[in-house]
Image 1: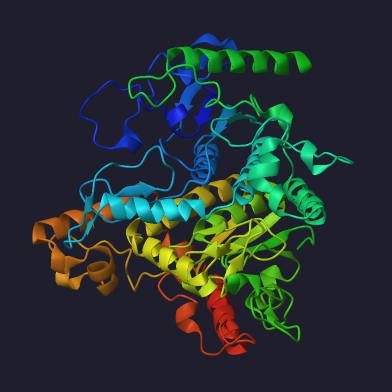
Image 2 (image 1 turned 90 degrees about the horizontal axis):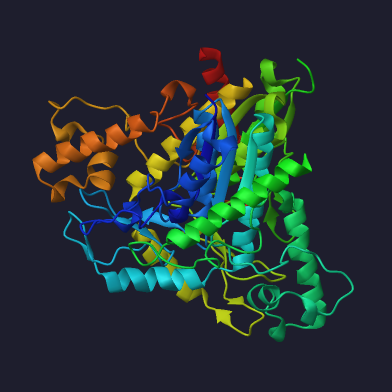
Length: 280
Length: 277
């Protein structure tokens, strides 16, 4: 039986769909079986997917690097994958472990999924929440987003090539990527003011640079995306309108997308697949 | 052997040829130096002499980045690849960019790879080296090595499965991995924990601060986790317990990376390993 694979972060893993009060670890409070989760709506309601077996590799709090690794893992673990939906997440994200203990010691620089308590280790060390937050927050703000976006472009291209070799259809979903509309469109012969707001402020910070530097760096960002293979927009369900932007409501944890939001995601994918089919 | 078949190297600075060239002002990488071990392997081992070499090594690469390099190599060349040597590096490593400038802004957790000066940003800001070093040292100290090693075991097994799908021979090299001799050998429950390897006792389990019951519990758990990830496959490692770092006997132009004699040792290790395969 062929398989359809979903990879991604908490939006794919179904975080917050588990209506329990006693969940200790925010990284694992998911419910992949929820009938309201967009993954399952797609699988249950789209004929071209429901003929296959569903595999959900989503992991709450996963970074884009981890999502890439999980997608490669899926490809290596199953020889008969028909379709992969790979949902990219916010950036920067980086996860690590403070210790080896009976309780969770996982930390991350992403803001949403962090534990809320101090972490005690067997050697008597207690890392206070305040200290951990201070270190990871300061670490987080040191990241420039261009390098993080470039990773998504690189990962997408490696996955596209791997998928092609195994005759797998792969599609990308913008879960929480930070770029704005038409960010990847390289403009020519225009003034910096006409770049997208995200390009101007977050990437180039044009108010603090000379025009000469702005043009040089604008060329460099797009050259680097091109050298990595570029963005193949035909493979993206929602390149410029992320799931996060489209959130209409929340589920049980009041953080992750609720029923109406998941319905919307499902409709977007349904329309996308219909257009893909028509284009063939 | 057809020239179309490829010999691939992936890894960190040891594989990227760091320090093999003096351009007059600084020491830079040179992947073509004849004393450099990938070139010795390519030119002096019969089974590789007909192969074209592609070296994906990048100085300062983390194990995650080396995993990505290797998947990229397989994505780009697939069944044209005959053999991959994947060299794993020190841990924890994580690289990121402080800014987007015309000058270097790449920073890393690893102290030896860090920028050695304050970094000016076009925003008018200045990121002081002292500040960055302090922050990254704090962050580095928060990492426990078991999960970093577990990542490497996971990566190795994913790559093995991927390589198998293309009929590629994949071998691993211990570049700068931190574990000690026989670290991955699971001892029986009856073995006193005093017989665990020094690295296991101190760096991983910190046995002086745990109860005997907990020591045994965590020893079992760490090996269970390695097993669940697919295990280490010692037969596919050139030097599982004898890292390249341990075998540095001289340095090249930069005074830090392995020189002619060290590269000869690494080459001989690979040659002997292949003869025993």
